Length: 342
Image (tube, rainbow, N blue to C red; front, top):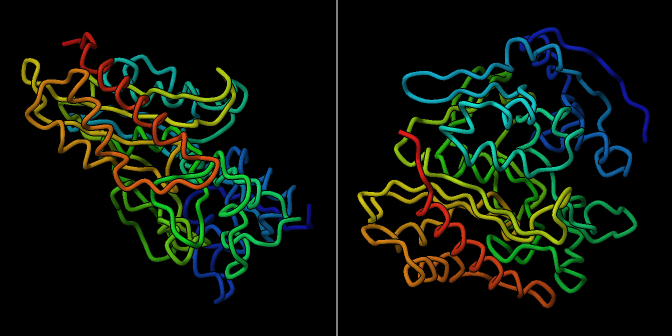
């Protein structure tokens, strides 16, 4: 690990003010020379691997009092970004009214990491692609723009089949983000240019020609909260995760599903996919295929086919298309059969 300066921020303003020292070359948050530290479960790992090389780290754990609350309001749920994963997953009202959130968080990482990791940092975790995390591989456009992508012709079993480009096929690794995608969450931000709120769906950027720019955050911007509306599909929601082993493993395929049913017919469906895409992935084609229909084996499989119609597999990850379809089909059937509390 390289030497770096360490500071503690007492509030949002003092944390953000630190970014007045940024270089003009720091055009995006993930590659800036100053980085925020909350749980540190991603940042510290990548600093040890010499993948991330900040010159200054700002500890923002003192912001938990202001930015760590869980609030239920008339119009929905507000999750402070400094709330810990376990705190949100174990919340009884979230389990009842937004089960997809609780399930996605409970199936992530280990109990120790869930106790440490803040949900704001969780959605910003970076890919587990070996070629990105191992600096002995020179060709990684995400780590060294313009160097190429070793995964394209390398070992790519864990890589993405949706949202890929000829520059990068690295998979987004998180679970919680899929729940937020399915529930149409909004993100509150605070930064050097003031406060703003954006759709969660616009937070992450597909690789396209600039895979090194992973989010729409500007340097110094803090995620302060997530807002989730009290939508009719929120209670009938679930998260299904398929992986190589039953615990402490990243998804090969996952599905976050939320349904609003009129008797047995779909009024609204919200679907997000994980483990198969470069960013948290909203499957709008699958949602459209379900609208107005009863969910059964036939309609669920038709929706799954629509979700993966544009998939682009490589040599070792083609199995993810069929696995992803089966995962989504199973999730839809389970969600349709749920007993929903009134």
